[in-house]
Amino acid sequence: MLKRFGIISILLLGTCNLPGLTEPSEYALINLIARLSNSQEAIPPIRLSLIYQNTTYNPGETIDLGMADSFQLINRSFIIKNTGTSKFRISKTERVKIESNSNGSLELQPQAGQIPDPWEPGVEVAMNAIIIPGGQPEVTWKLTVPIIEPEATTQTLNFKMLVNVAKPARLFYSVLNPIGNRGLYSLRWNETTKILDNNLSHFSGFTQNITSANQNKFLYYADAGTLLGYRLNASLAVENVSSLFVGAGSVNYLTNIPNTNRILASGSGNEMRTISYNASNGDVASFAGPFGTFCSSGEIFSSARGDFIIQPHAITLVNPGRLRISRVNTDGSLSITTNDYTDPITANRLSKHWKSKSNTFFYSIPHTDVPGVNNFKVNSILKRELPSATGLLSDVIAEYSLGGLGLQFPPFSSTILLHPNDRWIYAIGLNGTNNPAVVLLNHDLNSGEISVANNFTKSDSVGPAFGSLSPDGKYLAVRYTKNSSACPTCERTIFIYELNANGVPVEVFNYSANLELGEVHWMSTYN
Image (cartoon, rainbow, N blue to C red; front, top):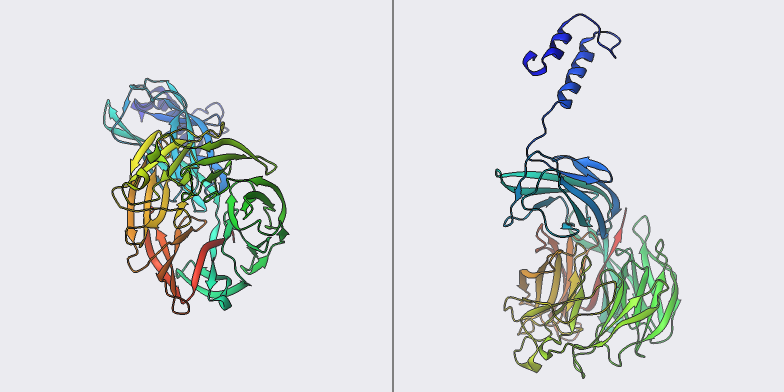
């Protein structure tokens, strides 16, 4: 003790009162020793600190990022600084390790240039963070930075965030045949037992196109030109939302436009409308449009951010691979930004696409598995750019292999599901013998690189399959055709897969019915 604190320790051993103390109590002396000890603590040679909202956090401390909805795209800025006394080098071959208790995403990017090499004391680097909190009420991340010089060591940065999580409550499905069974039904999802039960009928009649909205809080469908929908009340009972007539034949195809409180309806008259709904109760309010489409549009869809509507041209007609892109304005109107784009390379004119949420990249996947058919690519995923600022689609800037799986993803007979963490893509297509196949693709949020992570084929099923991801990102529901016989001997199945820490689907339940089933959609609750 005397050696460490020198004359301070000698004074503390004396009998005189110290300034600032009402009496020479043992407790007060111990506190003063601790404060003096901390103030004189040496700065370590290697220390990587983070400065966020004017507060400095040292390794091991936790940065509170506040509160958000699950899978909300968040961009934050902060500074990382070498607050140690020595310069150091970060490994260029070993990536920063990110550990989390959730299925969300967190990616770091320097705002300009590269990470210093070496990193001198006092040097600051401005960083951007892409944050997509996952499906846990409290999300934590631990970042481990590998340092290789002057010694092999690590520095840790910790983050946490409170999250409003939408939980899956019911799985809706449509029945197309037999005629007497047509309508919309739902099954209750039991999170504890991981089974579907309590089958309910909600609507009698033909409805083929359904969409969910606002983190699956609402579900909408069309009936004779009228848009109708459902919500769940506090007791998880299904209630009707107010409906809206938008014109006969005007709502044949529905898709959600994220982050806008609108859904897109396209009809048989080569026109589209954007229909607004109340974000609190799901009531349908009004529509904007109509807006024109291609004479024969393929699957019209929204970008993951909800900033663009993309119209592919139908592949079976002229000009396959042709695209029109329109910006979604705040009033629901659409403004064309890219008109009649056709890739100059015939082989790149694919017709199944998706747009990422966290970056500017736009992807296309093969619609045929037969080499030589119109010279289309059969084993490649193509990457282009579609910046939010311009809405102008670029030509192909990168190409990634599908691993020779021999799969096809034709329009209207395949499904591309973007996991809300933007890291996992589930492509549900067909193999060469018409069996449905599910491919998990990994998406790098920084580089946009795509790689095949997992795949499986349902050899006991035939024809197209349809899927839906639960709002908490934990489950994948896929509807398969067990046989294509005429009903009532037809058989359809719904498989529920739990997604593991790497996004790989693991079967936990299946439901079978002698009915021709259409789409499946989860509905959620915050209760």
